[in-house]
Length: 101
Image (cartoon, rainbow, N blue to C red):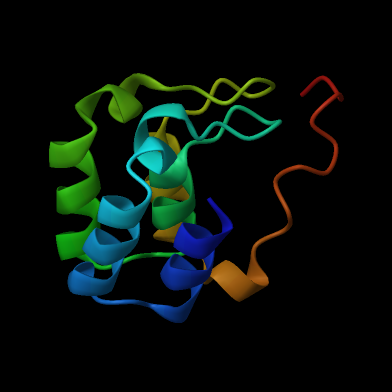
């Protein structure tokens, strides 16, 4: 999944994301990290283009319902949070996940 995350961080075009997914189709279906995040969470966090988000949603629609383990955030929650902050200024969302809010 690192290839996809790096592509999202670089602002890769949908064609590059498609190439990565086609080379490693399990990235979308089975790539869940230790925090319960799937590629769509990262695409939203790194403000991937609408074309990339649309592609991920069409290719793996079940990822829309995948919530993170600690905060139970859907990709939509991550996208909404990132609309108000730039990815570089956001606090790492893995810090303090064990704390009660």
